Length: 292
Image (cartoon, rainbow, N blue to C red; front, side, top):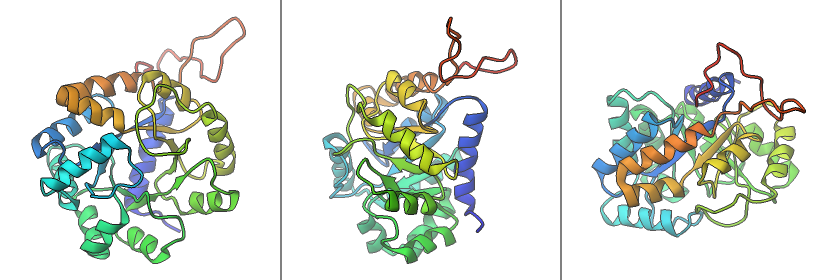
């Protein structure tokens, strides 16, 4: 079966990063927060400082998977009139300004259904979105919607967690045309001081099940370069959300750029040789650019 064009563009971004011996960096922002101009400037700063893909969160009044920071940002955006239209406008502006990196809409099922599924999916694709993440849509829960997403030319990314059964994991792998989104902990979004101690083992187990069929990206709780270095050894990509939103709120788009720049440098999988040889890395080649 042929992958939708958006899914192919998402996977090509993972292929390019892999060829550069680094993990993909995915950044998340709430569309239209704190206002339209700052949201656009923050998205551009993220791309300009090393984000490979951008998730644009669709503001919603009941974001059940989000922690206090992102939930508050979403509520503020909704109060200001935001919603799917905010994400559509932001994506259009980014494409008009020449940003070609993959864009994913991350939003809950309710707004998608209320606005009209087919209409909304076509509009997302028309303005330049490549994929869709619906955190409250379990795999195989609505196969007709999955077909509609593909028909619109969009990739889809399903979420799996530590307690996802092997059977459901396999279905999520097969259904995820963009990447498989791994949540390595229980709970909601939010920056944390340390990654879950079991995250590495979980990602290794999922990697064995995936067997190269789809890229694997890990999110929820990642906020520091050391998190990116640690998890980037076990996954194809890392997703940073709450820390990006916090940087925008505290230091504006400039703060987003600074944060993304530091995280991007940590995606490099090259490691220095030790007396015992190389540790989960590739020997640097003279012609390789290992600066990221």
